[in-house]
Length: 139
Image (cartoon, rainbow, N blue to C red; front, side, top):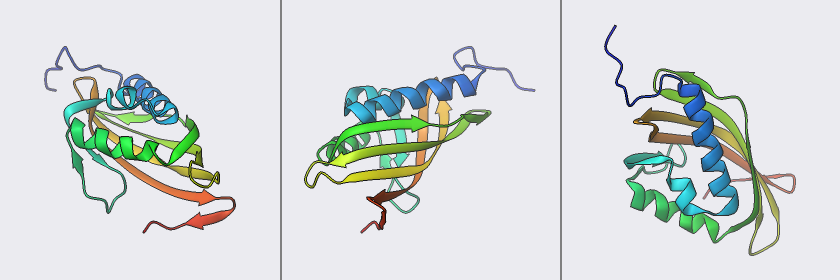
């Protein structure tokens, strides 16, 4: 067994819960500073498996700032955090109202994260959205 770094938390599940709660609160309240506070400066964020990776806090912040122009009245919830080593995952649900149309949208998916030094080094999101009973396809 290798030595454990003193700056790495031993309980990735507890760290994951803290990260997911802060991330979700930041998303729901459109508090971009809170949302990006869970990421390392050089973190990688993938919105979907086929999206180009956003690398670094500036790119991640830019993505989430744009999201806020389209969403209001957000509510975030998440399931149990599953952790092994520096990785964790959880399911999530995010419901919001479109600012332009007033339509309610239900987003459900999963987060898969690798941590380092108590923050997210890489986050991958897999999600699907529905609006008022119909599937919304990404363009």
